[in-house]
Each structure stands twice: as structure tokens, then as C-alpha cells.
Amino acid sequence: MGVRPPARPVRLRPRPAPPEIVARTPPGQFITQRLPVLHYGDIPVISLDDWRLTVDGLVEQSLSLSWHDLETFPRVGLTADMHCVTRWSRLDVRWQGIPAGAVLAACRPTPTARFVLISCAGGYDTNLPVADFAAGDVLLATDLDGEPLTPEHGFPLRLVVPKRYAWKSAKWVTGLRFLAGDEPGFWERYGYHNEADPWREQRFSE
Image (tube, rainbow, N blue to C red; front, side):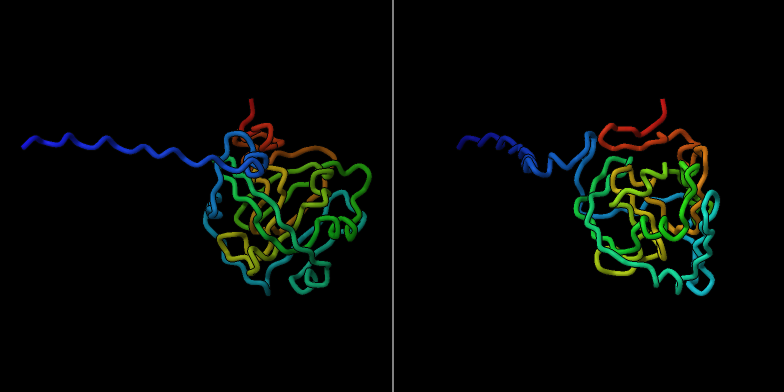
């Protein structure tokens, strides 16, 4: 009786993504259904009784907002894609929170304010042009996928900037300072690209 030769391994080709998904995925990214937890340093322990959002710099009205104060601001929902510099993308992330435009209306940046430096608990910060911060899809988020933010995802307040890599969507936000000149944030000082456009693969500085 002869010996049957071993079966040749079956090679499965990955199913190509639908065209509409491909169109929403920036170059060099892969799609995940998770929202990985990545951040600098330890997760800060924050009490809402002590937490405040400070808004200052080149503004007509400086603000020091408690959590109770923040609850008086308008709230909106936002469904947006998130793209991380580590090459994962998650589509249709559901956020809820305060539109950045509502904070701008309250503090009224002066005409000389061209940039905003976002500071966070734990010493992290990041920077944006005021024009980018004022975009209609930028949110100071309090909820993620229908639930309040957890500490690892930025409780109690997280910036969401869908058109930029996710390090610009800073967690644990505590301050907004409006400036005439640009000041690089934490990762920008360590060589990440200042603009962080995922569609142009602006991951690192030249």
C-alpha cells in the first residue's frame, strides 16, 4: 500500500476591503475594530470635584471652568474615523461632547491668536493652529461609544481632532492657551510632524 503524499497547504488570501473602506483608509494604515490604548506616562487619577479647564492667553475672556460649568455648554454627537501614527485606524468612532466652537465663542480669541496649546494632566501637551481647532468636527469629548470616557481613554475630557493623527486628540485635557506663535507639543518636540495629516503620512519631521 503506497504512502499518500502530504496535502499541499491551503493558502488563504485575505479578502480585499470594500472600496468604500479603502477610500476612508489613509495610506499605510490598517483597519481595527478595537480602540487601542496608547499614551505617554501613567493614567492620571482625576476627581471631578477638583478638575478645571483653564482657557487663557490671547483671549478677550479668560475662563476657569469646573465640571459643573462645562455641563452648561452645548453638547453634540460626532461619528468620525480615528487614525493613529502607529498605523491602526478605527472607523466610525462615536463621540459626544462640547464642540470646540462653543469654547471659542465663550473665550473669544483675539485676532492675533493663531495657535492653541492644549495642556493635559500628567504633563502632556500638543499644539494646533486655531483654524484647525475651530473646524466643525473638533470636539472636547466626554463620552465614547455611548458611555462616559474611561480613565484610559481620557476621562473626564479628551480633545478629538479627526483630520489629524491621534496624538493630536489629547487625553485628560486641562488647559487651552491661545498664542500668536506656534509652540510644539510633547511629541512634536520629540520629532513627530507638526501638522500630523494622515492622508499625507506626516508621521515624523524631516
